[in-house]
Length: 365
Image 1 (spheres, rainbow, N blue to C red):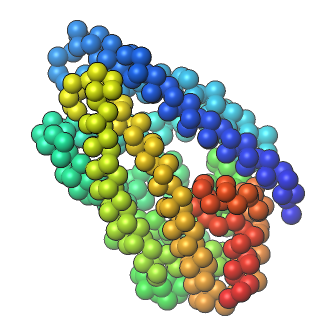
Image 2 (cartoon, helix red, strand yellow; image 1 turned 120 degrees about the horizontal axis):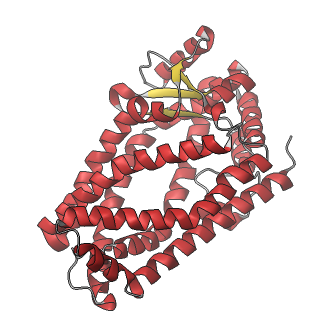
Image 3 (cartoon, one colour; image 1 turned 90 degrees about the horizontal axis):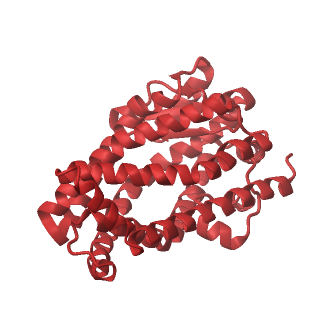
């Protein structure tokens, strides 16, 4: 077993840089607006670009490029150096660059059209933009959930059906118990990037997929893998996915409503004229980050609740309590998870309960 002091040090470093990066990002964006640089950039670009939509794109790309340059050293340290230092990464430096480039391109292909759509909505509906945009984002989230397994995931990983017929049959039987019709089970080459292991249930409708990392298939027994899949299927059986969509939709309406009104109220603080003034739009991100910070412990609490429920389903459906506990311990060691994080850190930042609490809960079942 991994010494938890090593895991704690690794996780504390990651957490420190995550918090520091969030704070620094907020401060830089605030100064960008407060010191008038946002307005200066808009005015400068207006000398060359008359179309407001094109101007918004260039404005956003420039800000994104500057932030990328500023935070690349931090990302290199946390995503590449630290992962290699703790023997968790299989990436070469150029592979890390390439994967990051793909993430940027895919993010841009999805994010920039949404940005233009948002700008259209705010121009057309004014202060009420939050209502139609919330509806549009719900539609987009459903579409993305359907296309991620078949269009986006293959950009990053090779996804193929698993070869082990016995394991496949076990998983299909478990799926039927959970009320899910599954015709195939897939694996993806997680090992090309990391030594960590994981499994996931993804997609909606006909694109639902059960995905197993090759690192999981190579290092765990069939009984152990079965308990992991049973946990993931528990989320489906207990309708956590539908509940998350419903709660996410309601919360997105509330969040966008709050952002819209706070944005309008704060315009005069920075000498902006209208809500659709391009230079004022970074304010939306500032307010969004503050609201997101407030909501984070609430959403994480709900997520942890769902994890306990899915654990209970895994035990009920497989009757393999010891295998599940052993699997969780092995996964925690392999992924260098902190077995007993500080209570505040777990409450505020963790979407999953600590392994110590999960095992205690499983033993009580």
